[in-house]
Amino acid sequence: MAESAPVILYDYWRSSASFRARIALNLAGVAYESSPVDLLKNEQKSAEHLARNPQGLVPALFIDGHLLTQSLAIIEYLDETRGLNLLPAAPLDRARVRAVAYAIAMDIHPVCNTGVINQVTELTGEVDATRLAWMHKFIGDGLAAVETLLAALPGPFCFGDRVTLADICLAPQVYNARRWGVSLDAMPRVAAAELALSALPAFSAARPVAPG
Image (cartoon, rainbow, N blue to C red):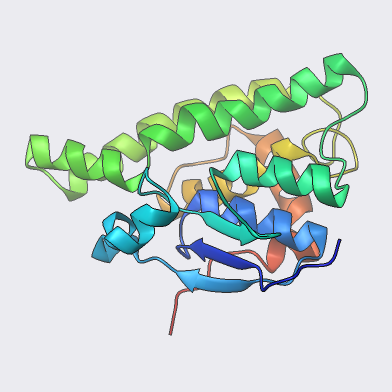
């Protein structure tokens, strides 16, 4: 499908939702321009960005003449329009892949995003210690559950030897786990899947790189 205008990804370099969108764009072979939205400067709440995404979140993607929000919706759009085949054919297998993806994107990620953490630390008055304890609790418990889900599925990736929606969600979450010092020692299946994914160009090229 030919693009009539440049594809623009409004993202933040360390956002795991943005990381997911970058992976999917790379898998689709879609060239895009990155337009940074600095979460630390609260640019996601600017009038300019709220016009793109009323939720004040990243990423937002301008593609095919349309502006899309929500990372999973963006990934599904790319899957459906660029033929990525991110879900297995069998309904039961699709449900299992979705279960892993949703456990990360809908359960771990939302409680660990910047807005939630800022509110929690403001209420407690303890910034560094509270943030670290919160991340260890919710990322650690969440990935431990994902480990159990993956243990019942074939490798080397989350579901066999082809990339699925679950993999696009897993890699950014493991990046965050390592960023916050969450141990993966008791999660060999999670660690092995992420290691296998890291060798894929679409994943390695999407990894967060600090601006400047």
